[in-house]
Length: 243
Length: 243
Image (cartoon, rainbow over the protein chains, first blue to last red):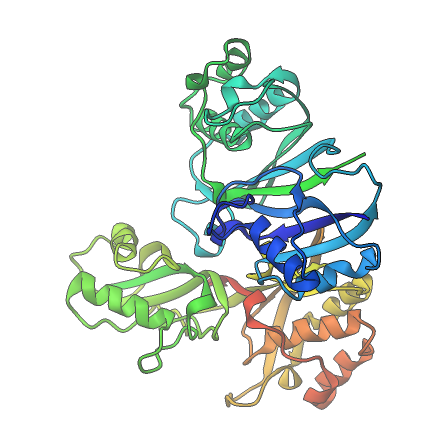
């Protein structure tokens, strides 16, 4: 049977999702828990990697397991073997051709800022302090991300992909008191893409980049037109959508 | 000169506000920083204590310091000597009779819940997981706190105070997606009062306490009519008001 699982984790103490030797990774911890539970080496497939320090509210992974286990309750058994900073939120029997990576249709990420001149300790773990920004200008910029574009400029080198064209279905920047949340839903994201989008929003908001650089970056693919890759701690993979 | 300072801290790794021997406390760390900065033992007065694990967005303290220092910039100098989980947000010269404790008029606390069947690691540090609650019933209960009451039943024994009568100016329970925030502003709070209010809301929401117990508790002072004292990690001292 193929199982689809939704998992949340605090990325602070992980070297990202993917197994890398002896380093503490989310995939590694989940595979260890599955081994403790079943006595078998079960490989899991994530919807994609998250980097060191990136969090997840609703990452999805899939794996194959013996038919005898009741899928709906499996998450509780897995949680019993997981560290506190990872929790499987649900498990269910999926179709035989389900694959968390290849069946994925959309993903939603959130990047969190807070407005303050000085660091606020209770916000520092999951958000980035910003100050003296033009929020309306940032909200205008966000709209430019929507649609089908070549996001080549919005990617750090280091990983090769066939195509750098992606569709952004929805992109918004919402303010609640002093918190500012950038939410973006797309059919896929390049390496560091959301953190570069967030960095570009910030630079535009600070008046350090003209808003036109965004459309120019789509046309030219020039990484230098955009803001820097912001800190991973403020990024959360919110949801992975399959329909 | 008397200085009024606003401070934020993540209470997770502190034994509360007040100095207690060798234990790591917020007051202790700030007094150490002031000693490093001035070479003098300066005692600070907080608006009140916060217990082990309780956080602050805007706690206030006052102290006396040499006239030669520019009050408005002092907070930056203090921060240079503080650990990362405490940050002074502002400092200003106050009137000669200002005392963070005795001049205080109102305080606002927040208690944060989130709705989920399973723990969500990115929420666990600052909020309490709850599940299967009647939110409307909780919102009805919150209204009962407003006004002038005897809050004797809403206090843990262990600290003696002259009067247990307090005024609650505003009390609300607001939902944002799966987060539920109980905010309460009063002229003063008894030991564990907000955590018992939160525990009572939760028990009423779960159908384990009748809503009438709240008014009965005001009349009788009977602690047993109310919910338990909830976990400190979800409590934040949001603001201390002096006018």
